[in-house]
Image (cartoon, rainbow, N blue to C red; front, side, top):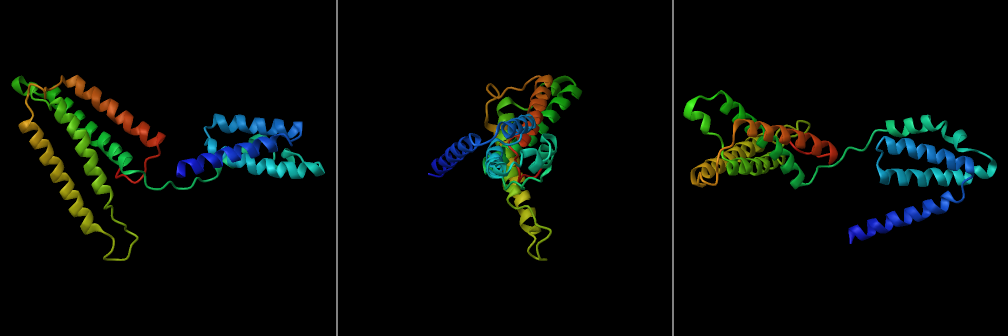
Length: 230
């Protein structure tokens, strides 16, 4: 139901913008086209652009009746775009549990893949064949993500009154999450047959680590993941 209402709102806004556009003078149309080009190139959010244009075109349609142009109202296209882009964005709320777990899993899983790769490169003889199995590594990504999610839910608030900052719960949650993580990894190593939980070459772990770290950075920025530990 929420998605339907949101979609209807977007459609109504688009229809209103189309009607307003038809009321603009040619000069004001050129101004809005130039502004749209700059904001689009700057990756300004599409929904925010639609709302902004609705406000601007409403003002323009009213003011152009007395001969006032877009440039007189907002300055040059560059000046207007600069003011819009420099406006501080609202702080995003906490991301979904799935995104926080994914972000944490990519971090911890990649860290252990990196450690495994480096350890294998520096190991000698039989130890060079004792890397973390591929299934164990996958479980490490998943359980690591869940552990980071649990810890993130108990992050202390240093600004809260004394006694309500949550440091005790945070320590307990961190300890419990790490114990669950270690237990899961120990059980995976002990009970998953080596025939299907084969170790990878050292370079493979390093590649997985690199891809994992890159994916964490990309998704954190792209999806604006907030509320995690790192």
